[in-house]
Each structure stands twice: as structure tokens, then as C-alpha cells.
Length: 113
Image (tube, rainbow, N blue to C red; front, side, top):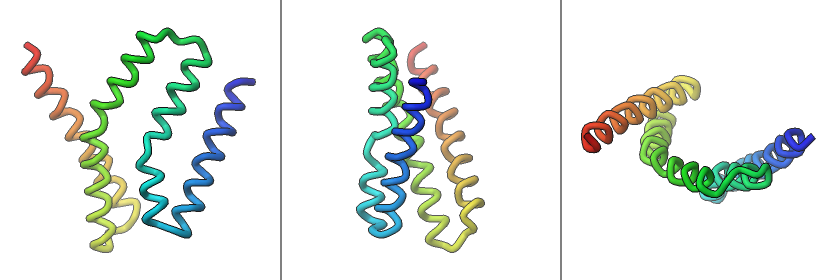
């Protein structure tokens, strides 16, 4: 039952952001840039009794995903600005994100060793 509650609340938040973005693209983009998914995930994990050390690890690991996300959004934004098909732009952005993620992972592993 709690899973259904989480899905409904999360879907409502996404729906509201989508409607704001449709009417006011810049403001919607700013709202979408907020770490809503991360915050909701932390709240849902906490309410399900996940220990604080695991919540801390989750929060810190989200930070490692930020640079790749920025790369992905920049690629998508530039592709759409140059009239590239939406699905092609999304695919390019995801591919860029994956390449950046693996490069970042390789660099971090080499630095740590």
C-alpha cells in the first residue's frame, strides 16, 4: 500500500512540474532542476526505516551523478536548439551521460589506487 502512495505522490509532483513547464518553460526548468527525485527518495527511504548511514551514502552518491547529468542536459539542449529530433537528442544525451559516467568512474578508480 505504501508503494502505491509513493507512486501517486511522485506522479503528482511530476505532473505539476510538467504543467508549470508547459506554461512557463524557464520557471519549469528551474523547478525541474531542483533535486526533487533525490529528496523524495531520501524521504521514502527514511520512512521505510533505512538507516542513516545508508541514507548518507545515498545522498553522497547522488553527487557523483551530477556532472554526467549536466553533460546530458547540455547535449540535449544543444541538439534540440539545432532542430534534432527529440528522440535522437535524448539518445545522444543518454549516450553522453553514459560515456561521461564510465570516464568519471575510470578516472576516480585510477586516482584512488
